[in-house]
Length: 226
Image (cartoon, rainbow, N blue to C red; front, top):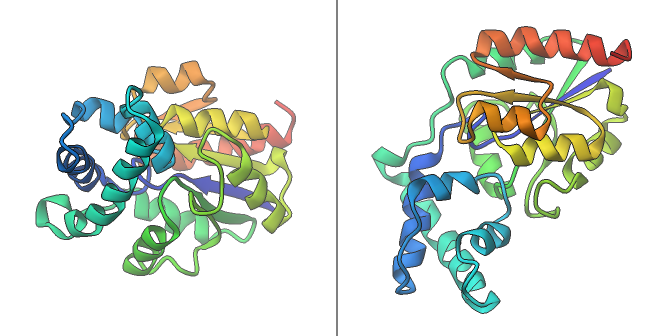
């Protein structure tokens, strides 16, 4: 059996509008200048406490915690705004469906999102039966700690050589390498493809068609010891 684990934000769904709006409001609500949009997108994938530690390193932990709490309060409302809708990336639904049809593949999610946020997307896309292991920031250290992947492999009984992590950020790639599994980057997310390669991605897929082909080829190569 093989295990393919997907990141969520920036890989499956484009949630940048809601994330940026909630991040910016968290700072302004506390009387702080908001960071640049590029800096916000640069921390997507980290846990909220770690994100604000990166975005506001000069602030004491108490303020970083207050920023995280403000974000949690604001995000649901920002997500409901039409401009902040978090659609699937074009073609990714077909990738998930194709993999879900395979008898030799299990699907998982490893994300800095909350479990509630992931559950909403799974319900919206009718994916509840597709993903057998869901690992979120609610229960794990922030990426790139390998805890999420290690737990997913433990729950499914799949070995590292048969496991692949798919993500758009260097945190995803570093997490995969830390867990000893294959790492495939996607070029349509929030980190530049070259940064994913530098982080150790075996391949960076430029399209969903390329991703589907890459997943099969990479798993075969790993199991062959390549």
